[in-house]
Every structure is written in structure tokens, then in C-alpha cells.
Length: 355
Image 1 (cartoon, rainbow, N blue to C red):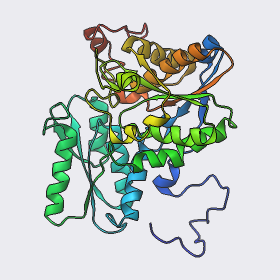
Image 2 (tube, rainbow, N blue to C red):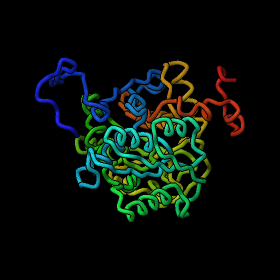
Image 3 (spheres, one colour):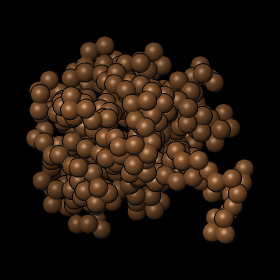
């Protein structure tokens, strides 16, 4: 980062300690509010709180991982602020958005590989913010054409040509979980005054769950950590039996793994107490309810998370405080979750105001 001026100029005042002014994109990442979800809390007798990660500057919880990964690469000398560099990643969309915006702020280029099946809104946004977007067919993880493997090869080829490049590797790069351990978890603890009984969220890379779990368990070892999993993912089975075994399917994007637990999640396994499965109709019920009755518009993974928090609250009984993650906003899924034709095609309920 460039050095700060030693004295204020006529156009810029210095940022005072305790000020609400932050320094650029990086300074705006984190410190999102906890929102009390009124209807979920009333229905369960618990305090159900959602961490409003859709309020991040890039619009999702993945801004934290993106910043952590790039800052870690800079600390290692793999990228140098102010000098040319390239960030390469394979992603369902949100991590690519976060990485591209952080890269823009640091002066790097970004190459983002995404399955073409992801929501049109995320793909359009990536193009809009200047990512070199490479679309691929959806493939199993073991296939060389899978977006993760494809992105790794791009990074290797660029490195062989002498480019200063990193493969972000959000699934295996432990800077992901470390960022959540340093920021998200402590924020939750402070915001609840330490009065939090459980945390639940779905996993794509596992960075959020692992990082938050480490931070919260360090402060209260009896606090419950519960993985939320959509149908079609094998992580529920992995927690319950040790085997990744997927059943069913889901329209949610960016969460769930069908073949293997990612590296970030494996490093958090010792902190996970249980897992819950959530079907798409349960998630959609919460998405539509939040939007219609509480004015909170969220995407599919947040719907999974809120539905899991309600299930967990009913297991634990009234009087508990349960925190989950509102990962991103609903506008990124207008062509899917909020598209009546898409919902009918999938045999899913259509909310009355869209019907």
C-alpha cells in the first residue's frame, strides 16, 4: 500500500482514530452488522442473528477471503503492491468478484474461471468490474476441465512464462480460514457480548465455518458449531459418518461438495459438533419470508443458513442465541431464485408476488 501523506492537504483530512472513515476497499471489508431476524426468532423462542455479509463492499462474505488471500500473497512476496501481478482463481462467482475488486485496488489483473451455469448476474458483474472471465463447462472435481483445475493450469502456464502470478486456491489456501478467524469470529463475539450459544453456516471452501469456529471455540469451548448443507452435497455425511456421500440436488450456488471435503474445512473438522441438511424448498421459504416481511433480500446460501439456524434453535430449545451468515444479496440470483419460470422448471414454489 502507498505511504500516507505526512500532513493533510486542502482536499483531504487525515483519518482520526475511532473515525468512521476507512481507507479504500480493504478498509471497508468487515465489521458488518448482526441483524436480528424477527420472525425466525419469534418462531423458535431463540435469538437468531444474521451476519450481514451482503453489506461488504463487493457484496458478499467472500470479500473477506479475497482480501486475506491477496494480503497473504503480498506478505510472502508473491505479489508486490504497485508492480504488475496477476490473480487467477476458479470460483462459483463471489470469490472471483472479491478477488477482482481487491486486485483492482492493488493494481493487479485478474483471471477468473467460472462454470457457465452460474447466475447471469454474477457473470455480468465480473465482466463489468474488469475480470478476464473464462467460462467452462461444469465438470466433476476429478476432471481436468473442472473450473478449479482449469484455473490452476492457467496460473502454472503464466508462471512458466515468467509472470508474477498467484493461483488463489480458495479451497486449499488456509489464508481463507485465517481471515475469518481474525475478523468474522471476533466480530460475532464482540457484537453478542460473548452471549452466543451456537454458530451455523454452509460450506463451499469451509473457510468461514473453520475460521469462525476456531475464534468462537477459543473463547467458549462449549459453544456449538453446526455445518449446514444443501441436498446434493456430501458434507453432511462427512460430518456424520466420515464419508463424503451426496444425495439429491440443489439450486444453490457456491456451497456444498459432492466428492471431497476441501482443505480449509478439513482443518476445522475438530471444531464441528454436528451437521444439518436443508432442502431447497426450506431455504426458499426463508429467502422469500425475509424479503417480504423483513425487507432483507438474500441469496440461496443465506436461505440454507437461516433454515439451518431455525432447525438448530428447535433442537436446542428456547432461550439460546444462534448466529449465521447472510452470505450475499438476492439481486445476484434474479434470473434463478427470483425467476418464476426457473422455479417452476425445477418444481419449486413460486412466491405470490412473482406468480
